[in-house]
Image 1: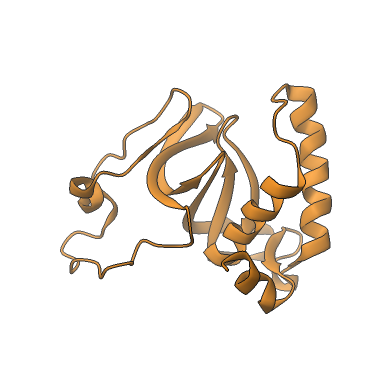
Image 2: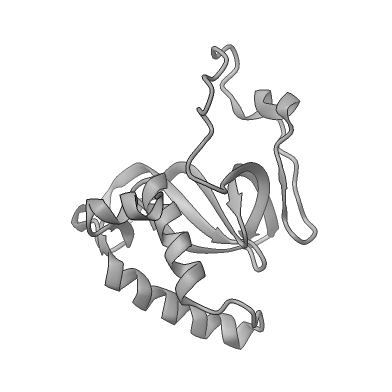
Length: 167
C-alpha cells in the first residue's frame, strides 16, 4: 500500500501533481480518461488532512476554498450498513461537516455553505455555533437518507439543485 502524504500544516492541503496520480489509483488500473478526476468547477484533486483523535490523518480527495471532499466507505454499526459516501471537511479545523450520499451532493453543500455562512471566525466557540447554523442550512436544502437512521447521510432535496450548483 502506498503512503498518502500527511499535510499537517496550514492550509492542510496541496494539489496532486500529475506524477502522483498513481498514488490514488488502484494498482494495475488502466490510466484514467480525461476528466475522470473532475467533480465540478474549481474543485482540485488534492492531498489533505482531517482531524482524528490522534491528530490529523492524510487522505486524497478534492479541495475548493476551505472545503475538502473525499469518497470512502463509511460503516454505520447502529443500522448495520457500510456505504460508499462523500465526506465534506472544513479544512482550517479539520472537522467533518457532514456525510453525503454522493460527491455531487457534497459539492452542492460546500457551495451553499460557503455562500450562506461567514466562516471568518475560527475560534472554538464560533465554530461550534457555525456547526449549528450549517445544520440548519443543510436541513433547508437536503434530506437525510431514511435507511441510514440514526445517522445523517444527506442528499440534495431536488435534482435541479445539483444542476444549478454546477451551472
